[in-house]
Image 1 (cartoon, rainbow, N blue to C red):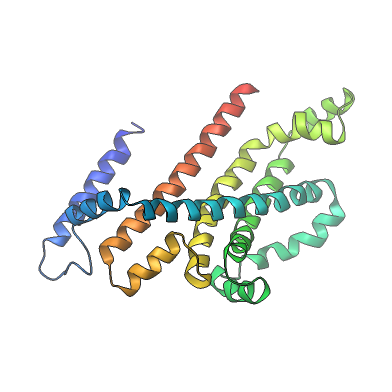
Image 2: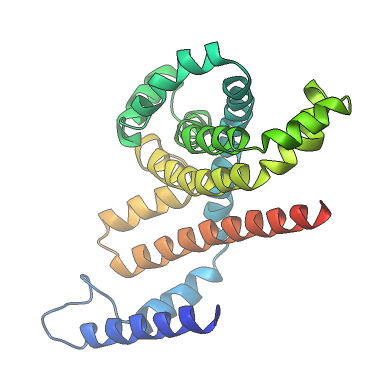
Length: 245
């Protein structure tokens, strides 16, 4: 059932897409046909430049996600452990989500300059909030009885975090990481469009200027594949980790 339902939905979507392109009112530059898309996709897959751009976007998104997580996870633990830190920081967390990424990009150019560093910084800013929120909620929802029993057994501080709190909160943490990495890919693409680079965002910008709708469909598909692959990999890691405990 888990495979059949998405397959049926995909088939219906492609069928509707094909029917839409058969009307005379939709020229190719507005909506290419599935056959044209498939032909261009196969062509792009065999081009080394496509995989170079794919690798750069993956690198920027992954590095940005790691930087964001390296800041968000310790801060989440501090919020969980300290009422003072929580009271000081939590009122400002919502404001971070009110600023669109496209508005931050010009500021990062002024502060950091063009190139990979600014794009990674933008990705880190985008993933920071979902990772922080997921980790904080996961830690706060831990079973108090389990923690008290662990304290009685002598588990405190780092030992308690690594042996009890971290594993029990892993589901919430990995959920934040999955959502964060998806946003990190968005940040990498937006950053490349505004700040330059050699990734898929730059390719997408060139295709837009050339009114290459078919190429844009292919590039967006590659971005979707990248996001789905990382999302699935983190989900499988979470399942594997849960089985270990």
